[in-house]
Length: 302
Length: 302
Image 1 (cartoon, chains in turn cyan, yellow):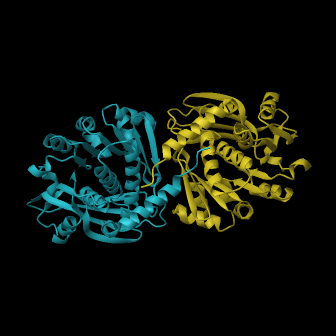
Image 2 (image 1 turned 60 degrees about the vertical axis):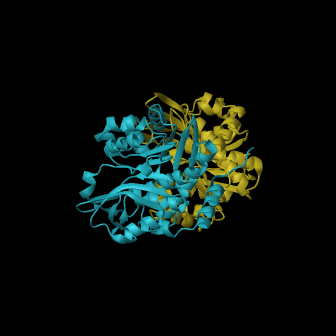
């Protein structure tokens, strides 16, 4: 079981492969569905408006999410509208309506405070710190962030980075935070703040994990067609922590496998819009793709 | 032994870490030094001017290159001047003087025509085809190219691509040649021309090899400081084919190891200017870094 704090909202997304309107979106929604793909349940802490469709609530429940921490505030849901370019690596945000998210302060129900695993999705680091005050003795805490907070809330983000076990950033964010073009130097600067594990996402190039001076690289799954990249990073986090939560420790062997499971789960996410593919993927499909990742990266000793 | 056809010239290079003038450069020079790092000798086919310094000639000889196919033409050597940006991923070409390279037509000495392994470095594909006419029954032929020939000599390049076993391109070149943003689709289009193996270079993100519908990914070595990226791709080719030439067949197991050796050798190249590091690297250093690549990428079955 993982406590997940993040956004739940309604996404309108256009890609070269189609368009969906007011579909289930938000970092926490993708995380929930991704962890569920590895049979790991979540305790969800988020906020929606009074217009949140009941079928979205049902979908989250069906994916093993405990919704006791899902606040419903007067007003409308958080909404995001985006459009992907032909090459799918760039997107334009056409509109962001914070709505009830502007009023959000995470409150963990008493039953969530004993959480052993905690995921702080990409939200204001001030709110991430509020969550860290509410959990009693988590075994593993993991944090995601973005460029907006690096420039706009650097002090709070630095404090949050220093208080978690696992940090997830993309490579531009590492360079931006540490103000260096050298990714390795940037990584060392962030790890010097305290985290035991740093995962650097590289989009279509996969991800690298750093732990105790060691590296582990995992490529992204080679997909012929990506239908909608939205939520890939949050799904990656859900697959990663979903696997770790079932293992219980941060040994390098478990971290390596977790990174591969994160990549596997994210590769399913982008095959369809919203969490549709995550909701249908089977355990056998996940294991098959895990074995393919081994095939993609294995080579002999000499 | 590998026949290598490419350029030899004088490079003037400026990076944030220093500047060198009229140092040994050119695709064939890097290839020779890289293959030598894996104890594989080369038969060099190239051209220099009358001003080619004797110490550069001696260095090539000391790296196991048979210079019987190195033409000396009246005039000056090919020269290239470039400057790297702070982030080392971008460079400006400040000057290119073709000089004797403009007159070059590769001529293989009789003793080279029985070559079992042939590397066609990045030169005009018309010249690459001239070489393919001169070798009798090579076991493995490998070709490198660049964006300039894709737009400027597409028909000759297509013919050359269809006549070699292994193609080396970077990801932008694959997309440009196949006119698609999807790398996988581009790769399939190129392999449909005939090559058994396609290696797609991704710069700081490593490389991927495609063979018989299978993939193998290898990351780039994580270097804290890159002194001069010039020649990384040609060194990669030299390490790759240098290893394969000692194994003799294109089994997937050999191709995987060869890709790792290519990455290992290229990682040494960029630690210093010109071929200085390649000339000093030891077999033990290479084996140590190979084992590190395994450490970077290994994960268990589940």
